[in-house]
Amino acid sequence: MGTETLSNPDSTAFVPPSFWMRVAAFNLDVIILNVLSQLLGIVHLPMVWFGVMSLAYYTGFFCRNHGQTPGKQAAGVQVIRMDGSPIGYGHAFLRWMGYLPWITLLFMQTFTAILVCFVLALMGFLIVFIDGRRRSLPDYIANTRVIQAQAVAGMKRTIIFVVGVGLPALAFGALLMAFLIPLAQKAVR
Image 1 (tube, rainbow, N blue to C red):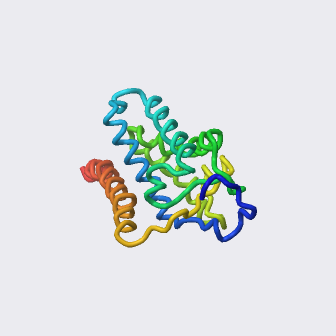
Image 2 (image 1 turned 180 degrees about the vertical axis):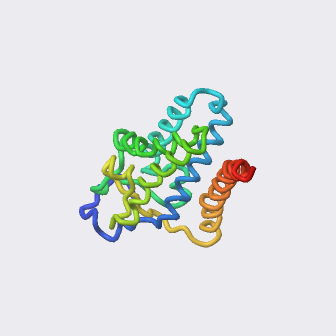
Image 3 (image 1 turned 60 degrees about the vertical axis):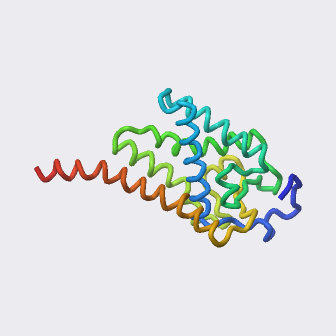
């Protein structure tokens, strides 16, 4: 895409990615952040350090890599401003603010807290189904949009979906079952 501003931001050059490609890109970044936090030992520190690391990750990659974090790059998606120009640190920071419900979700301890945080975070991303440009809460906060910058097909697409959608769905299902099974056992007794 480059660093130029396109004259018509509504042109067909700005094709939004599918919802699931966005989910896959987001989850790939979450997996990378979790691996980094394990390697750096941030898991054992207060949540604020994970927030600082995720802020540095998102703003650094968005600004240095033409609007693409490693997850977005793997999925072939790119974040740009509404006028087609690249995002800067201010826009990257505002987008990160839109991810705060998801970041908070990683540190919730009770099923109720996880459920409330998950519903709030999910609402911010379900907007893509009613928005013609498929913009989510972080896009609205930062006045940005996500486009499909590179085509992803074949085996790479399959791997991205398995790792970015399938594995997190399994992990979420396992986590949900870990909370629901004990509740069901208590109810039966």
